[in-house]
Image (cartoon, rainbow, N blue to C red; front, side, top):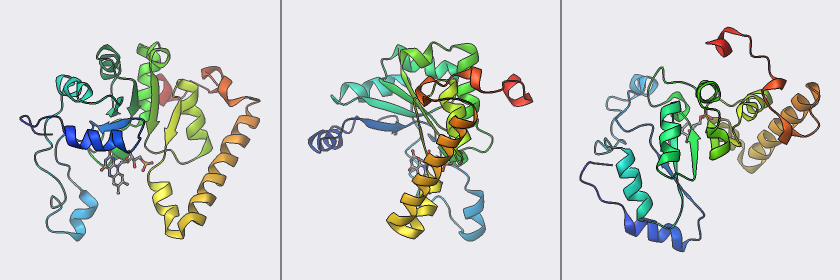
Length: 210
Ligand SMILES: Cc1cc2nc3c(=O)[nH]c(=O)nc-3n(C[C@H](O)[C@H](O)[C@H](O)COP(=O)(O)O)c2cc1C
């Protein structure tokens, strides 16, 4: 949003009238991005980007939240400090995400962010619902995020690519992933996935210790 933008009350009213339960607000790509791959094919990759989208602050989040009765979930939380801040400003839930690594090269993956929160302020996972997406490809990716305290994970590109085969492709992707989650749970001796915690994952690799 631009600094002088006001909350889009008309849009919020339409979303409420449509019976939606929540609004997800992307906060991780406030500035324009450098689309390296697209640059190989297109001369101007900023064509679809809105240069006004350069303003995002917690005050503005509060302004938006005050303009609708629906909960607004910030998507793109990347630090433990912002996770805590989201709780302070009354966010109903948070979405750990780095836009699938598409917005800023080098930004942390959700599993790294979840790990940072787990190490530095684990209460976050009990005080608020935490979701995550980005790089989730296998059942074991799902398990690691759930073990750290994430409630639900999302997938972007896997379903986008599966959709090349339409509904059949999406169904196949879902069944592959759910089978992987089930077999991963079975392999670590977990009968109820709701009981997963960090005792089920080995926290000794360089990544986990950093
Ligand atoms: C082609 C494409 C377009 C996307 N556009 C948006 C967007 O407009 N807003 C947004 O919040 N996230 C957008 N995302 C990010 C996804 O919402 C999601 O965070 C990401 O794809 C998850 O990572 P994954 O693809 O590794 O599963 C986009 C992702 C892709 C692949």
